[in-house]
Structures are given as C-alpha cells and as structure tokens.
Length: 257
Image 1 (tube, one colour):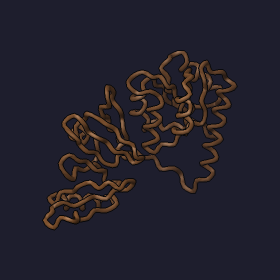
Image 2: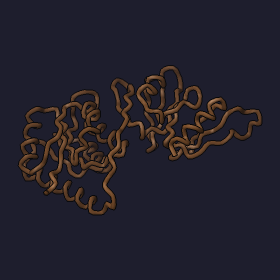
Image 3: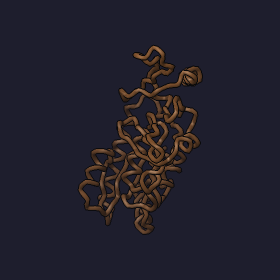
Image 4: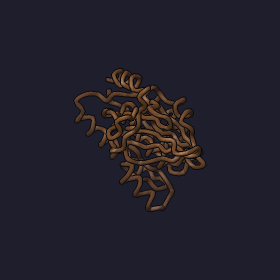
C-alpha cells in the first residue's frame, strides 16, 4: 500500500487554511493538524509528527512562523518545511532557506501549480533520505520549557539547553547547544518545575543539562576549594559543582549511561 504523506498546516487566515487543505487533498496528502497559533502547534507537534509542515510567518500568539521552525530545528526535528507567506521581506526569505533549511517558499496568493511543485520537492527529499536509512527513525518525546523572553513567551526544547545561569534578580541567561543565548526573566525554580530530571542544579544560580555533560573534575589552583567544575559538550565554559552535591550529580550521570 502506498504511503500517504502527512501534513500540518500552520496558518492564521481561515480561508487560506481552507485553500491549503484543498490543495493537500488534491495532491493525495493527509492533513493531520491545522493551527493558527505557533505555541499551540508546538505543544501538539509531538503527537502528530507530520512529514511536511506548511508554515505561515505571521501567526496568532507571541511566536511567528520563523521562530516556530527555529524552535523545532533546535529540538532536532528535520521535517520538511514549506513557508507560505505574503511577505516581501528579503531577510525573512533568506532566513527561511539558509538558517531554517526550508525546502520551498510559497508567496501568497498560492497557485496550485507552484504548490504541487513545492510538495513534489519535499516528498522527493523525504524519499531520498528514507532510502538511505538503515534503521527506521526513532520517535522521541520532547519536553518543552516555556520562558518569558522580552514581552512574549518562548518554548524551548529541554534537549537544546546546555546550561542556565541566574545573572541577577531580573535576568536568567539560557545557553543553547548551538551557541545561542536567550535572556529571560523566568526564575530557575519555574524552569525546573517544567523540566525532567535531566536538568540539575549543581550550584546556586545554575542549572545544567546532564545529557550534555562530558566530565567533571576538582577545581584546580585553589587547594582549599570545595568546588568541582563541570565540563560540557559544545562549549569551553565550565559550570561550578558544589562538593555537597557531587555524589548526587555522579549518581544521576550513571543513571544516564
């Protein structure tokens, strides 16, 4: 039986959403979700896991389409994304292709021939990638952590977080595995409340993702120091580890092995 590829539509205009659904049906695709809000789409994404995403840039809520796709990429998702937008902003178009690895950019109003060309390209890439796989892809559950970023709320996948530090009462700095940093006003306790046991507080004012720990060692240069230093993947920065928490930290690392 021929596989029917699945599609998620993220579009805030009802009538354009209806048109895209009609186009999908004509192309033999299964539309498994339609969303107008970027944050709601992210929360439901792990349930649906579509093959292809049709993504508008301007959406309801705090997140635009570019931010939604960037969040998915940071979480490790590689679904084929077709941007659908009326924007003429060259920076947005270049971002969609070069930073977010979109397969196509459809300008509104969308005509059926161009829509089919975009879908055909996405399907061809999916089929090529699947033909090279020796094992089927493993589905995994993503833990989303929502933080306050300026005046909006930004979902971040837990796996994309390297470590977090509380710089002062108002500023929390979140370091991501791709080298980016996000400034937030969300407290560490609120972040921990949304996380799994993989986020650990090794020292006052710090959280570290145990999945990205390379090793740890006693702090050198200070004979009387009671601290250890945590060495992380992706960065040369070392995070302090309290001597009182060293055993708990070591046990948690063993559980991950």
